[in-house]
Length: 251
Image 1 (tube, rainbow, N blue to C red):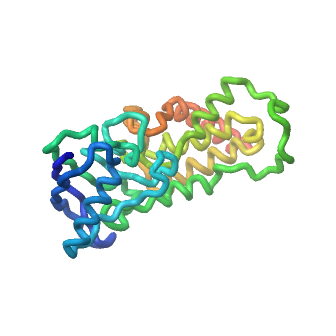
Image 2: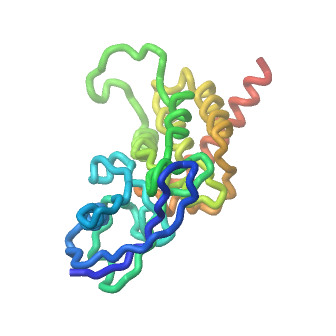
């Protein structure tokens, strides 16, 4: 069993000024996940008549990306390739103090406590992260030849779960890695070619309109990404955007 001290960001409404509050987390099982630990603490807070700590979650399997917590100053914790819900308490030591805060970014306004509004990412996808042209009915496997390198790269980009860790880790709150993954996913596939130029122009412009910062190539985004998306996708998106911009100006 672990006895821990939690330093948790509490903020009642988006308009209120938040602050760090201290909670004692006693007798926490080492096999518990990080979110299960918060559940235990919340049950004790409720029993004592307090307001539970509000945090976002859904699948608790590292798939949905909604468990956007900064743990000890690092989005999703210092463990590589996992989300907050996949962190287990055996990674901590008895007597540790754990700082828990929401993802910090101008485009991620705090809703309450540890919950932030990440709908800006949804609007980037809505701007062009789809295929609207008719692609026909489903075809038999392997009937549409795709080079293995392209298929692998598209699959790696599609692994992005849109959690926002890349944005929270960046000193400029840049959404370049997220946007690049969504652009690159379809850009490597034959079905994505007809709208390739339109897609990258629309998504990058929406990203800028949402107030995300610029990329300074320090790669905190890749380090914090729970799916370990490569920054190579950013380079590809920049090339696609430059080419599409030139074509647009020549029309």
